[in-house]
Structures are given as C-alpha cells and as structure tokens.
Amino acid sequence: MRIKRTENSKAVGNEPPVVHIALKNSNQSFWFSGDRIQYEVSVKDKEDGNTHDGDIGEGKVKMNIDFVKEDVAELVDLNSVLKNEDVLLPVELSVGRYLLNNNDCNICHRMDTKLMGPSFDDIGKKYGTKPDGRGYLAGKIINGSVGIWGEEAMPPHPAITMKEAELIAGYLLQHRTGTTKSKPLKGTVVIDDMSKNDGRYILRASYLDRDNGAASPIETIEVRQLKSPKIGLVKADEISGIILKHHIGRKPTAGTAKGDGYFKFENIDLTRIDALEVEVNLAGMAENEKPEFKFFKKLV
Ligand code: HEC
Image (cartoon, rainbow, N blue to C red; front, top):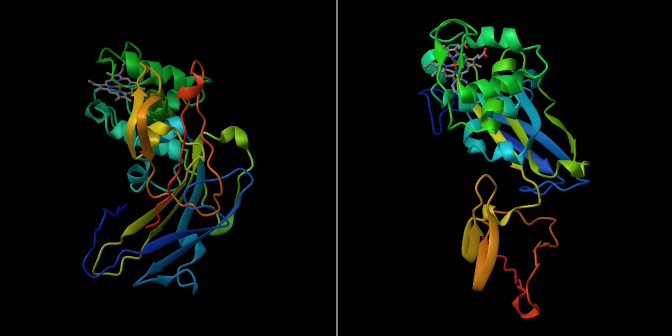
C-alpha cells in the first residue's frame, strides 16, 4: 500500500509527520564549487515521536541526493513533481514517470498487463539490455510504431520532445530496477566538480508514519533544491525594459535594454554571497551604448 500526502492532507486522528533537511555550511539557494555541505535530516511526528530521541529509527526514513541537469529540471515544476514521487527513485526517472503519467500512454499501456499495447514490464525486459534501448524507444514514442508486437499500431507523439521521450524511455527501461538505497540521515555533500555547473543538487527525505489503528498512515516528502550559481536572466522572477529574444529550438536570451530596465530575483538566500558577476555580450556595441548595472538588495 502506498499512501501519498497531498498538500494540507490531514487524516482524522493522525497528524502528518514533519520532515526537515537542515543544510549547514551552505547557502540555502545555491551550491558553490568547493562547498562541503553538511546535511541533517530530522523527523517529528505527533504520534510516533522523533529521530532525535531515536523513537523513529534511521531505517524508517528515506534519504536521497541527486544531481540533475538543468535541461531536465526545468521541464517540469520539479518541487511539486518530487513531492509525489518515491524519494529513492532518482530524479531523472521520477521526471520520466511523471511525463509518462501525464501523456496518453496509460490509455493503451499498463505496467504489468497487455492492453492494446504491450505492458511496460515486457518493454523493459525486451530492451533493458540493448545498448541504445533508450534512444531507440524515444524515437518510437515520438514517431509511433507498428509490427513489432503485433498488428496494432501506436500513433506518433509529435508534441513530445526528444529530451522528454528519452526521460520516459529511461523510466520504462529502469522502472523495476532504478530505485537506489537510502543514504545516511547525516552526511556531507562535496561540491567539487565545476563541469557539472548547469544543474541542481536535490536532497529529498521522506517518512511514512505508522498506521495508528484508527487512521491511515501519512507520508511527508521534503525536497530541497540547491541551484547552480549561474542563472540565466530568463529565469528572473520579473523583467522590465529588457527584451527577451526567442529563438526557435533554442533557449531565449536577453537582448538589449532600451533605457532603464531591471530584473528581479525573489527569495534568494544571500548568505555567504559577496559578489555578483554579470556576463554581458558587448559585441558590436558603441562605447556610449554599454550597459551599466546597479544592484539593490531588499531584505524581507
Ligand atoms: C492508441 C494506443 C497507444 C498509445 C496512446 C500509446 N501506445 Fe505505445 N504502443 C501501442 C501499441 C499498439 C504498440 C505496439 C506497436 C508495435 O507492435 O510496433 C506500442 C508500443 C510501444 C513501445 C514499444 C515500441 C517498440 O519498438 O517495441 C513503447 C516504448 C511505447 N509504446 C511507449 C508508449 C508511450 C511512452 C506512450 C505515451 C507517450 C504510448 N506508448 C502511447 C499503443 C499505444
């Protein structure tokens, strides 16, 4: 049985557990190269007690740490997706699972039984060991398929991008084997690899409380994201007077501001941040056209 917490859910006679991931030695919004982030998970539950006093043992709490590339992370509202996924299923597979369940796939497919299409278990078995199973299946999801499993055809899905199809295919291939082992509730994340700088560290912890007879158990999933310290202007919470250029098939870029313009990032932790660097492409600009920047920090 698997009972999921929906926001604000409250079963009568059972309070939802509170799961907290504390990050020490770290900024609370961003990771920085060279950081040694100390994390500690704690759980409190009205009926079951807490991890601090040992009423809730380490083995009862799930903990996982992933690094996920930005092009995957930005496909979905990651926080809300991960609040409904098993903490031990890696983030990429969780995003794949979410995309699968939010397309039309379940009309014709089931996990373990054949419907109009083959079961996802059978698909996983057939291609699980093939070297490019993921790329092959991603192509099939987009372009459709006929003649492999029988007479019925699968329609194409032109609205699904290659990246999305690969994530779905990745999940189909690994849905039975992909979950990882839980990590210790206290530890260090060493951020040492600059080449990974376009992505997020995701720390997740969950606790499913005990069924106390009268009420159903409730699971709380806590998600913390530490983002890359390099942020595109297009991610700003508010932009004014700056032109965003949209390119087909590419990410938008910010263009020249006319007169005064501003961009605003909200809810950023400024702890241990002592400088901001702005990257600007000044190619082709006259000296008197070059932009000037002023920074304002508003503490709330
Ligand atoms: C209208 C029914 C239908 C829908 C909707 C559908 N499928 Fe299929 N799917 C099929 C059928 C039928 C086959 C078998 C095709 C064949 O034999 O080549 C199939 C085959 C597949 C295969 C195996 C292809 C191969 O080469 O072995 C994959 C992977 C797959 N589907 C994934 C998906 C995903 C992911 C979605 C949702 C995005 C989806 N399907 C939506 C009917 C459907």
